[in-house]
Amino acid sequence: MELVQGGDFLTFLRTEGARLRMKTLLQMVGDAAAGMEYLESKGCIHRDLAARNCLVTEKNVLKISDFGMSREEEDGIYAASGGLRQVPVKWTAPEALNYGRYSSESDVWSFGILLWETFSLGASPYPNLSNQQTREFIEKGGRLPCPELCPDAVFRLMEQCWAYEPGERPSFSAIHQELQCIRKRHR
Image (cartoon, rainbow, N blue to C red; front, side, top):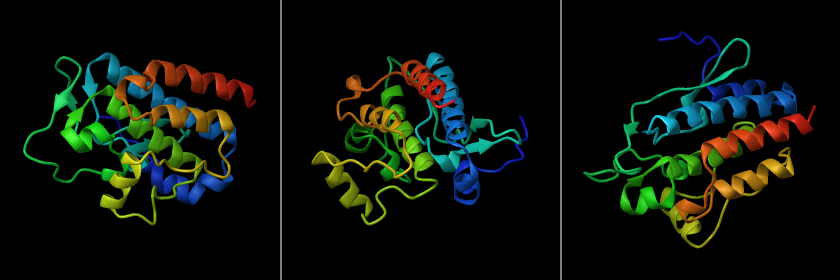
């Protein structure tokens, strides 16, 4: 196992985020997308993707970590049994919350929240809503607002990640490719 010196991404965003260039933030979320693209290609579902579960190396490379909730897919979907204990509601896709159905597409939803955390420099999603209120808000079509410093193209990608229907969300390969294009435009 690799030792990562920089700590978790959430703390990093809150302490160092204001000093980072947009290009660096875009590179870091691109790293996360590449990591998730790899996991998706191996049929692995993370189920707890969030800034708190990513690590930052000394050179600001972002690594996916905390695989405690991860599972291998069978037929593209992992069905959770035994209730929804310890589920990070504000990061979890509606189909996972409602039916316990986890997939790469539910990880894509969580990636959208990770993007939001990144460009809000570590803010907490849905800060004024309880978990139950968040679920109701999502079911009624509500989504997080665009962070102040977020490029429009990144917010459009977030919105795609938060499509209610799992099949309407982009793959991690498409997300990674789009983030690379956005980063090239921000040189």
